[in-house]
Image 1 (cartoon, rainbow, N blue to C red):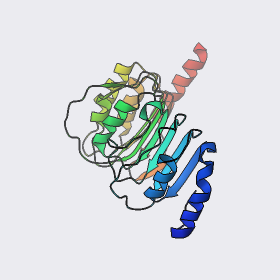
Image 2: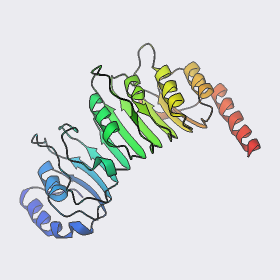
Image 3: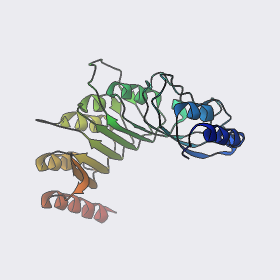
Image 4: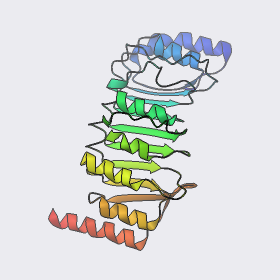
Length: 253
């Protein structure tokens, strides 16, 4: 739903508001004030999926989701300029969270508060790590994690997590001399998870081979260059390793 401008917008809202308790899935592109009126000040007790795109420069006030949203499980937020540390979201009940343009150090709060997530997508992460030592976070239900960083090191995020059910990792980051593979391997060892699918960008073939060797549960690899989001072909060496692993698994079954 994309809302039009001024008076027609008000008329639409007045007509729409009485139906909010019946809404289960809402995708809304609108100014923050209109979004706040819909999701913060109304009965949205039937809502399970919410996607928000704020179309104006926000007024500095955090976004509030109504306490009536007891069934909401999936939340996506685009274009925000407030701190996620100050918003009133139902963090603990979410099972999927997708947010764009996240400051790096706010990601640690998301890890801590969203302990019931099964899927987490943090895209466009930016800023520098503040070097604060934080307690490691256990996310017991997380099966899919996406971390997309711009100019930041990813190792500090891997170091903060334990993910015993992780099956899919999607990691994009910019590297100059080396990437923090030891932190990734430590996360997987610490978690004792069975990572099956790895999306990763901008690492060398030798590093990709090492990933396959070090992650015995790995079955699928999607390899991308940093400046091109399309999938790059795997080398013959990596392809053979994955094929042999798949064949061995079939023989065991």
